[in-house]
Structure formats: C-alpha cells, structure tokens
Length: 448
Image (cartoon, rainbow, N blue to C red; front, side):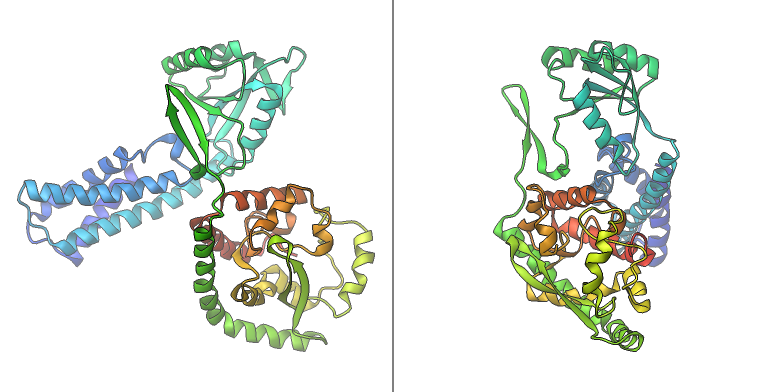
C-alpha cells in the first residue's frame, strides 16, 4: 500500500512537470494517490493470498487503472474540473507501470524471504493418508513457497505418525483443535469423502470465528487456473474444467505468433549467427550445421537444425557413453563431461546458442517457438502412454522444462512440465516462457 501511495505521488509530480493540468493541479496531486490506493483495494490488490504468486496481483493493478481513469473522468465532470487530457493519460500510465514494477521487485523479495521460512502461511492439511500426501507434495512444489505445512488431520491413520514428513495431529474431527494448537492460518481439505456437506459447512463456520481461511482441493492437479470455473446449480457448487485449448482458431493464432516473432529474432541474431559459424569452422573440422531426425507433432519425422557442437564422429561413440549410465535423466542422455563436445560447442551449449538455427524449423512449420522438446525416435519408443500426449502439439525451441532447470531435471519432471504445457498453453504463457528463456540463457544454468 505504501508503494502504491508512492507511485501515485510520483506519477502526479512527473505529470505536473511534463503535462501540467489546466487547473486544480493541487487537488489532483492530493486525490491521485488516494484514488489509486482505493482503486487497487476495490480490485482486491491487497489480499494476502494474491501477494507473491500468480497473475491475480498484476491483474488487480490493471483493473485498478481502468477504475482510476473512470474515477478521474467522473470526478472532473461532477466538480467541473478541467484537467488536461495529456495530464490524465500521463498520470494513469505512470501510476500503473510504476506500481507493476515495484510489485515485481517486492514479489522477488517476498519469494526470497519465504524460501528462508518467513512470511509463510501455517497450514493444516485434511484428508485421507493418500489424498493428504498427494496434496502436500503438490504444495511443496509451489515456487512461491506460500504454504508452511505444520500438521495433518487424516482418517484411517491410527498407526501413522507423519504424512510425507508432516506430523499427524489428529483426525478430520480434530481440525479446530489442530488449528488452535498450531496457530494455523489456512486449512486445506483434500478430497475427503467423510468431510463434505453439513460437516464441511460447520467447519467453515468454526474457522470463520478464528479468522482462518479454508481452501478445498478437488483432487485436480497440473491444471492452470483459467481452465477452472465454478458453476452454481440448485445450490450446489460445481467445478467446471475447460477442455485444453487445441481449437483450430487458437492453433492458427499460435502459428501466426511464430511467424511474426521468428523472422524478427532471425534478423536480430544474424550477426551472432555469422560469428558462431566462423568460430565452429576454425575450432574443429566438419560442417557448421548438424542435422538430426526428430519426432514432431502427431509422430511425424522431420530434420532439426542445430549448430554443430560435437566432433563429426560423435554418433559413433554415443552407445559406449550411454552404456556407462545417464546423468540425471534416465531417457535423455546428458553428461556434464561428454568428451565428444568441442571447445566452441561447450560455450554454445551453455548459452543454448546451438539451438538458434531451429528458427528455420519454426518458419518451415515443423516446430514452434514454445512447446515440448522434440524427441529422437529411440526416445519416443520408450515413452509411456501419458508422455505420448506431448506429440499433440508442435515441438518447441524452448519450453517449460528448459526454463525450469534444463538438463538438471529428471525424466519424470520433464514429462510433467511438458504435459502441463500441452494442457494449459496460451499465447500469454508462450510470451512468459520466451521472457524466462532469455533469463535462463543469459544465466547459463543447467545446460551442458
């Protein structure tokens, strides 16, 4: 809230200098910060559950900007104020942008604090041993570190003292006592068949008196928020799960996005491509580019283009190296000390520059800028049935697994991230992944 007051004051000062109002400048200077804080509050921008993770915090700022513009216009009309239109535009733009930038910095700080165990919500998980264990694992995967799971109330656990390292503090009838004993902030109910209807409503009443939040997991994991919505039918709340957005229109939009962005990236990267080509030619004998058959959308084969990072006889030595064991990943062969990689190739791999020629695969329609990793035929033969779902969309130059750990992820984590992307992708998600890819490439972490 203090940062939003600062944003309002700063925007008013800059606008007064850059685009002075025609009249009533002092009134606007005072009213803008107050109106901005009120607009953000009305759009739930200060709710604790929205701070530090998810897009809702940023969405509340965007909605508050629209409210602020409307409030300025209405106030000007009612009080017959005559501010310059340029002044209003500058104030609204600056206050929104500065609030978003400050919130991004505050979010990074808050995430670091939560990693150290501070500013987290003490949570009691309720359910059966199996459902509670699954929910605990999923909550621990959250990058925001929002939940500090301090206890579990589970049924059928007379001889169980802990669930995934979380102490059992009672059964589902003991939730209120567990909340008081653990000074909990949140109760998370995980698909417990014996805790529904009237019992769940009474629990909500008890938690209301204690100022404790109640959240209910329907047992649906790996689904993005926009695909979930509540429908009320005859007093019953139904959770509606939207089908994945693989409609022809959305697929065409994704293709159009690739065709617009890929040529721009090619033009910007052209000087670097020429330097890399010269370095490869001087470093070791052999061709500049490396072509390899990969499996794309619907199992179709295509030739992928990469800068050559290995000796020309690399494929002949792969079987012997793979026989020595895989590092981290049981399906994809990765080695930090692979002797086949050239000196220039090691640099290219560290910053993923060897992947840049795949832009031509994108332009040709065989790949997308963002998508699951294209596998080799030998790797696809090892896919379990769930992993085959990765072939429903075009493979990508980058994807969720590349920006979430790259080669340090095991096969299960790689598949989980790719499947999440296939089921939940959107144009906005693609842009977010491209931005995160730039950070991952510059940092060079997890690549070898």
